[in-house]
Image (cartoon, rainbow, N blue to C red; front, side):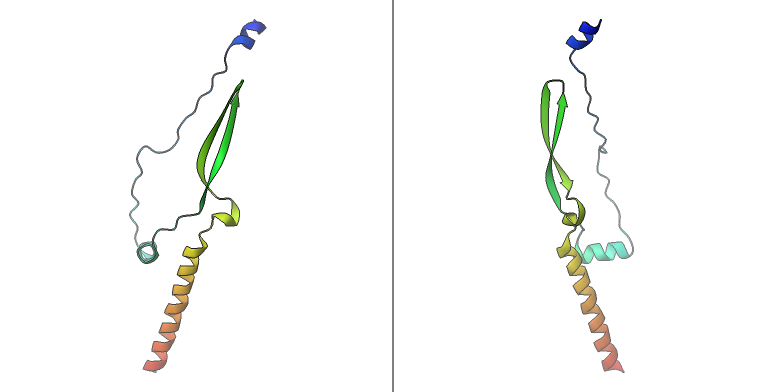
Length: 100
């Protein structure tokens, strides 16, 4: 009985939990305004290697994942939003001074 278990090949399953169709999200309010001005925010991704060993079989998969920690932040997009906010603030101060 133990020898039968040792001779059986291992069985493993992979289940894909991703949704079948990507549903388009309808934006509204401030999120829609920011998205229309600056574009969609997309975090920085990197290629990760996932190694899976089952019995004597070793398989490696390359997967796109968000970079861990501060490396995954899109600083160019954030800087653009921040600088646009400063520009808008200065323009409003200038306009207020002219109208006063």
